[in-house]
Image (cartoon, rainbow, N blue to C red):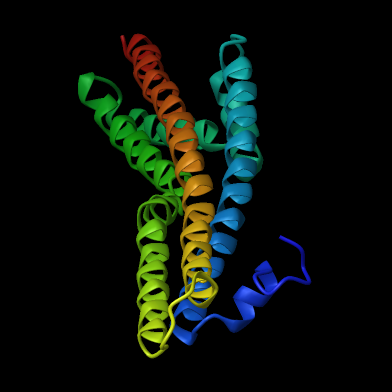
Amino acid sequence: MQASSDLSLITLLIEASIPVQIVMLVLLGISILSWTYIFSKRSTLKRANEQTRRFEDDFWAGGDLSVLQQAVATRRAEHGALARIFDAGMTEFVKARRNNGGGEAILDGPRRAMRATYQREMDGLESHLNFLASAGSVSPYIGLLGTVWGIMHAFIGLSSMQQATLSAVAPGIAEALIATAIGLFAAIPAVVAYNRYTNEIDRLSIRFDSFIDEFLNILQRQVH
């Protein structure tokens, strides 16, 4: 469409009925928030993967665990989630060994500490994913609401005319279809991002779980 035509996109947006405009504004707000969370989560997960890889390289390099823990403790935020899980377990292990001396029960404290830290880290990684899921599932229905209202408004206006023509009903139907399009525009990126980020977080979760089990095995060997 040309901008100068009566059915140009800008003209349809400006001349749309108030309920349809409200629907469009709501969808625009959802879309802006979705893209904000999409870019933010992309940066967060990229950083989390890099930090996890670096810590795994440092951990499996075979150095002194106490030295590694001190390095992590001084800069917890820079070392990432897996390093914080390790720090929690190592700190609890040192305390338990100092107080209890030995035995299998000494591993219960590190296990609980790492699991608690693991859960906090996963909660942080999964933040805002629920919004993306909701945006992906709800936005098309919000757009459909604008579509239904626009078509209804068009036919109500058509009923008061003596001669029904396509040009009379076209603007109302066009604004209704625009509401549907905006709903899909808000929903599709949110769904794609949610699926992708959920998959990345699941892979990180598996790496964290595997590390906890392997680290507990290392600690168990040190107890005996």
